[in-house]
Length: 211
Image (cartoon, rainbow, N blue to C red; front, side, top):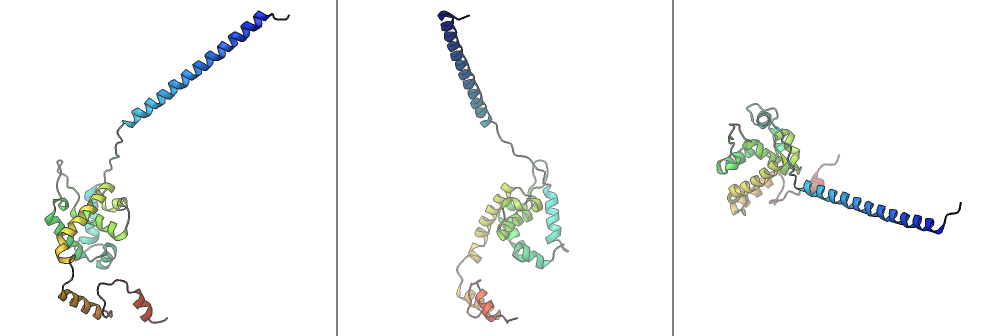
């Protein structure tokens, strides 16, 4: 049975309204979802990010470091110490003692819970390891038991302390007697006329015996 014009008109009109209503509803839902998502992001931005606390047992770190290198009968001998610290043991101990006597930062203190803090050996070792090997601040954590941010602080304080304490004696221009002493030392080692130069590879290659 053929539909009349009124039925076709009403169907087209109501169908168009339904499509418009659906579009309006879809747009409203999208706006609500977008608003909720933005509010969620804003709320998350105000949530403080807490650092994970790690019980490094710094007392064990100090004890192992002391037994390995600074005890009367250390695990590693003087040659290994010099290779790993890039200096002799007595030089390192002199630096540690000098910094500890001048700066409160390098003195071992006790906190409110009567727990000992990091020792001067730990702080100075962390700084020296970074300077000697050029490693990142977190590379010494597993042995020295010092966190990354504390290691960076140790390095900054160490450099400032060494410059302040030893500047007048070791970071000054050489005097005539210093120059003469250095020349004599270099001459005794076979480097005539060498003063303050550490680039001697050309001498080695020219004067080493051929295999």
